[in-house]
Length: 92
Ligand SMILES: [Zn+2]
Image (cartoon, rainbow, N blue to C red; front, side, top):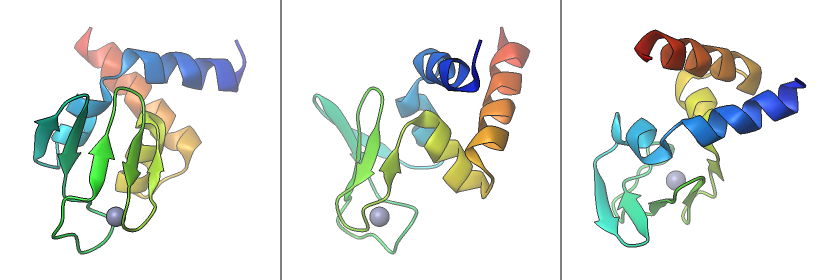
């Protein structure tokens, strides 16, 4: 399995809303969730979280679950994917 395929599979197995919800209070605004972006001083809840992707309409930060973990941990996508995979395997 290539790295790209395994990252894609990993994104499928992770609930982005749960992952973001660990550090950001999210409010449901179907079909998305909304919260305060942790990547800039946000007072307007500019962070939109969907099933697979997040996007901040203020600072432009966005991506998938692996991007979120990488940004929050300050590591590469590769390292973030490894940590997420370990967390998934530890919980199953
Ligand atoms: Zn932002």
